Image 1 (tube, rainbow, N blue to C red):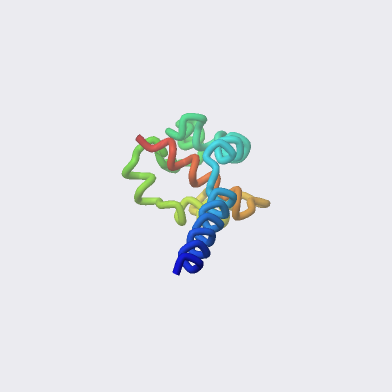
Image 2: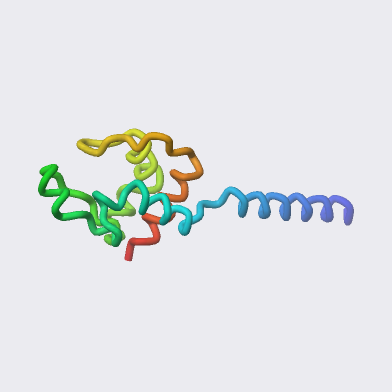
Length: 110
């Protein structure tokens, strides 16, 4: 019985450690956001008003928790990877970077 519990505890520790390795990193997401997203979405996540007018679109306000909740992690990732409306897909973004960008956008919501 002790051997089974000890093995189970070791398994849980390994799973938790692995989760930390693959967990989204909002700080890394901020760097990717600043490189790839800030021109249209603004440094503060509220959207670049001038760009919105020029493109004749509404750019979502990522500081609005309702907006970010509605988009969801999957919606943010899909939009970045595939584009939506006048927003072109962002080329060369890998899964980890998508996770990190979504984590950073989520951190902007108030």
